[in-house]
Length: 304
Image 1 (cartoon, rainbow, N blue to C red):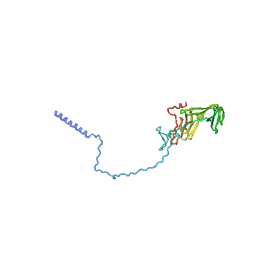
Image 2 (image 1 turned 180 degrees about the horizontal axis):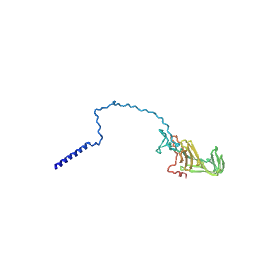
Image 3 (image 1 turned 90 degrees about the vertical axis):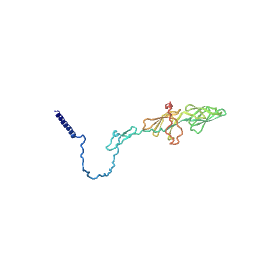
Image 4 (image 1 turned 60 degrees about the vertical axis):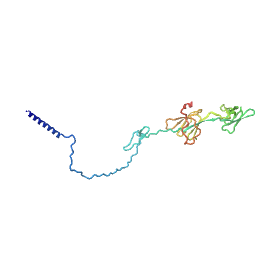
């Protein structure tokens, strides 16, 4: 009985093993199916030949003119198909613009300089004298514009061509110098009868009137262009600029000048000090920069 069961188990194991082997043989493969192998086949057709290169031909196209992108376009960038718009690069803003950028205006040099304060001499000057035996002094005067000198004594009233004056006093003054020499001068006190002013003249120095003085301004590159002013407020035109004398200090001396240029919103105001009275030798050696007040000096201090 036992042998019978052993044989039955053996037969069952053989059947299972056979079924497993059949499954392995008949299971489809994961990869693609094998390509069929051609045997006995050969290429057909013409032999391979390198094709000949034919260069392309080009035609010059006529592009239409660029279109302005101005205000009439309301700022829009208008352009047609295949038509390049006319645009500009703004270097300052670092962007493209439809309108050409306006280059920054460069302010030109100031162009003028303050030469000097010109004092006007009094119209009558004492030019000489001589002592008389009786101790009096004969005085010699020169009148501005008159060819003939005027001679008079102390106490006399003299009528000239343009003025009338009275001699109030006349003295001969002697001063001993350090080197032992004697400096002699004649000092005269007169009364100008046109305005009743008392003036003192001497034969060694010219008399200048404080009320009769003027400033002299000139163009740096054209020294022959000169303007004179006795008081502030005067103006003149030179080049493209309009210059106005705003303030004058005769004692320092210094002047404040305003320059107006078309195209500039702000006017240029400069405080000038007297320059060298000698004009530049040549245009190449000259400078357009006038003598200005140094940075350490406040312009306001010059006119207080």
